Image 1 (cartoon, rainbow, N blue to C red):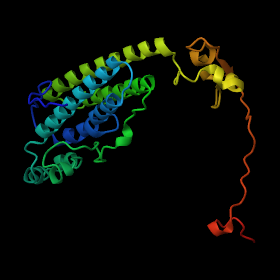
Image 2 (cartoon, one colour):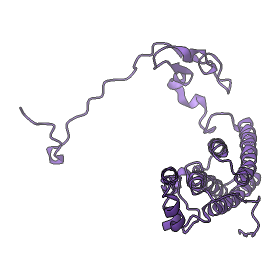
Image 3 (tube, one colour):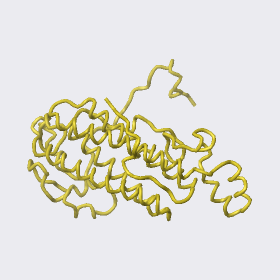
Length: 276
């Protein structure tokens, strides 16, 4: 059961209207790494979680928090759009410099949402359910969650430096703080799960199951010009699970055959049997 509370998690109050910034903020609302994505990702992971109750509880806690973040961003966008009527835009556009700036405004904020936030990115592309990851494997999902929070916080940090509006910055400071904690949270969960099951997903398919393919599990193939990549721990160190040592293959060679596919039936109209 979900229950809506009228108060926002944190105060949202802008100093001045800024339709251009409203368009940019759409990215962290409905973009690939926006709040809609992490909201849906955590909730679906939580809905489908099996096993230890604490993981389901944690996922539902943070997923529900992200619903609140979506509402905060909608409020922020709406406030930035206040006063952005078609008449005001037409008047402002009489100044060539202002007109050039306002050319970047998302017209859908006027035509579609009536000065409100939308489930789209900054270019108006609708949010897509394929953005989310909910595999049923806790470690794989937690790593995806860490990735999502890292990218989301990066985008909010970039937006933070794109505005001088102190009210907007105050909201972003709260979001940056929560995104920082969420990264800590996923790192802690990942560490706990790795201690239980090992570092490779899925843990139920151990290295021994690979049999003849074991050598390839530790080789780094140099497939670009130069050999600077040989200096990393991925090329000279040991596997994180202690099962072997990495090998740097400076001049890798193909180990497979040249693929030769038979010509399909002429009924497919492939034109491969054309005679000259």
